[in-house]
Length: 502
Image 1 (cartoon, rainbow, N blue to C red):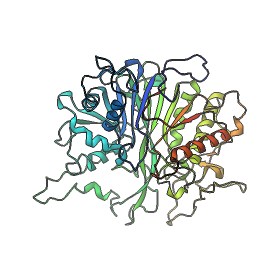
Image 2 (cartoon, rainbow, N blue to C red):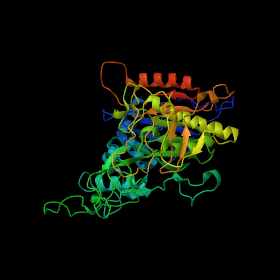
Image 3 (tube, helix red, strand yellow):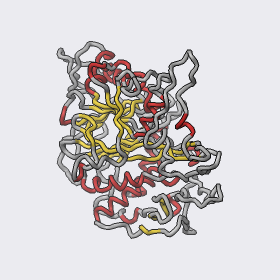
Image 4 (spheres, one colour):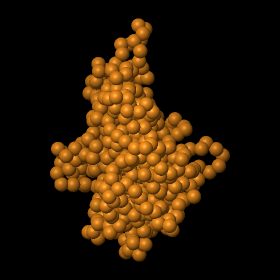
């Protein structure tokens, strides 16, 4: 498995080259502020070549613009229009211009668009590009968690910000919403395929929710219902279109207070806003023919500072796959370097926090290998957390204030820095708590826990200054931390001009 356009690689524990199961093209590797390179990723199974409906787009901040850029960079050189170089090598294109071929690619080759969360840098291309779809081909599926689709439906394709191009509420019918079941749909599949749904031809998918910072939610002082649940998209002046009632999905809007009704400063019955976790997604993508998998994360924050820690669930699901050699790569954000304080992460990761998360994953992989549960696991009878006197704290990760902002007893774990000795993983009193994993547990293993895993860093926040690109510093810090933690994985920055094979 390589980081570039090479078509062959090696798997953990296997010295023989093997054919890759996936090709990934990162159209947009950044998190802004440039609008032409924000998050957009194409994924396909190599078993189906470039057949119709064989590609999914994960997020669509950049979509057509990225495809056009690559087609112009690597124009087809053969008479029959087949690409003979670049990330689209082998793709047969019916038109002469990059623009027309990009439109064909979106209409015919991309089978579905998966959205991790509805922030603008992940959906702007979807909105701008959708009008070129042709109704005769049937609506293009847009797959996401219900809360994400609710936000897109209410605040994007709502005939105000953008025309309603969906097939709901009397729209144009160019898109259709596919609501994913968080954690996987148990009605589908069996064994290790249980919970996966078809993403496109050749690929299966399962979605786990993750947290991406926090936002303010207002509740009705008596019913506890969101105020906006009864609001309309816009006023009813005669010069405007008729009002459309906001859609209410399983998790209202885009935040997730339904799962954690007592998070933050406010409580139902009070007038002040409640702080709630912003919901994002991690997609497990599985090749239908080989069973190999990759993970593509949306924006995500560390569990150690989250109102609603959820990353540990992803690591629990990933660890057996890594130990078995079927999970080879994931794409995850690391927006800032370690120069940033926790207060300014705004729901994102930096190297020290990503490495702390990977230590949790490494510990779980070792548990799977050894067939044991960590002896550091213990039950607490209350939500109190003790800290060893010798605990060290990152100079940029400030120890959070443990005092509750209200007189009400807190029913969620306080935010704790991993380096403080304990990692909160539960949601209420009696939750499971893990001590921070000690790399000495696996440092001298014959095979380090994350050996063979390639981690591609996306959503880097560009500074647009004369200095070196921030990705260089982020990559250097990640590699230094990884060596110290004896993880065994490799870190790469994806090149938008090349394909990645996994």
